[in-house]
Image 1 (cartoon, rainbow, N blue to C red):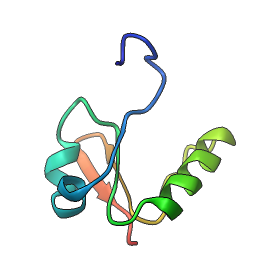
Image 2: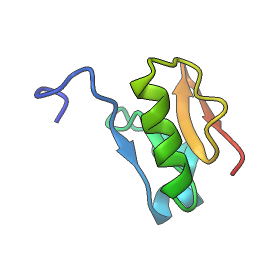
Image 3: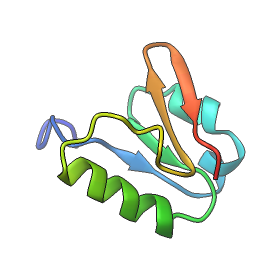
Image 4: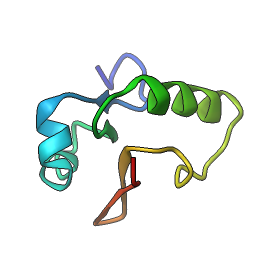
Length: 75
C-alpha cells in the first residue's frame, strides 16, 4: 500500500482501534486510527488534510503517533 502512495496516511478504525488504540498505533503499518464511531472524525480529518492542516488535536476520536508517543483525542 505505501509503495503505491507513500504520502497517503493509512487510517484504521473498528473495534480493535477503539478498544486498544495505543497498541494498534504501535504498528508501523498504521498512521492514524479512529476511536469509536467514525462519521464525525473521518469528515473532520478529510477536511483538515485537504486544507493542509498539520494540527490533528482538534479532531475528535482521532489517534496518531507523535514520535514514540501515541496521542488519542477525546471523542
